Image (cartoon, rainbow, N blue to C red; front, side):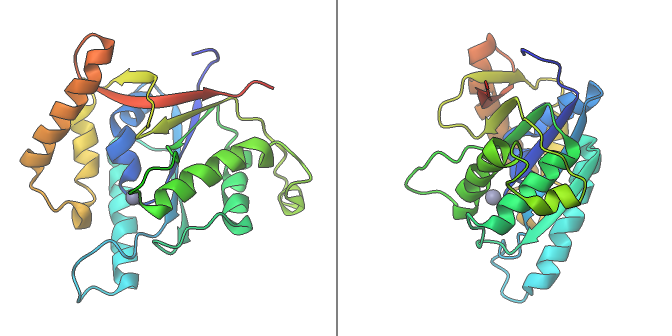
Length: 231
Ligand SMILES: [Zn+2]
């Protein structure tokens, strides 16, 4: 790393995406004493095949699950933006909401999902990743971008580095050997989303993480695409 990382802001499209993509790394950072804040863009209220479950009920269940996972990961804070599931748009409202969190927490590093287009991709995923990158640059930097944030006392802030999880073109690998089980623990706090038995998913994840670990000479790892913002 080129500069000291004390505060990390993680932006996730849905409850559970950050745990799956970067849970081991997040747990590692919090163990090192870094402050990690999670911003959850949507309320996940369409994430079920149970026809008897009302969206409002599901959203409430998923917030509780997310808070449980946050405790396992050692997060400082969870911010729920509560946009409806499958309705994330590249709109002023989302840019403003993300910009507000960046200016408020002034992170040394922003982590979000890779928005690189692919044929089959959850729309909320590329919207969350894309709009987070837009909020990082230029919206969080420019004081005229959102006059209302100035009125809230939130001064402009220059983010220096972004890491993308679930990267299309990974270039950075974090050793999660010591936090792999914590990652799975956090993932399994999202009970409503874990269709597969834990043993099965854990074995699958261990295999994938082992393949990623080959890039750093073995062990278990998570991949990222690192972007350094030079201005
Ligand atoms: Zn998702």
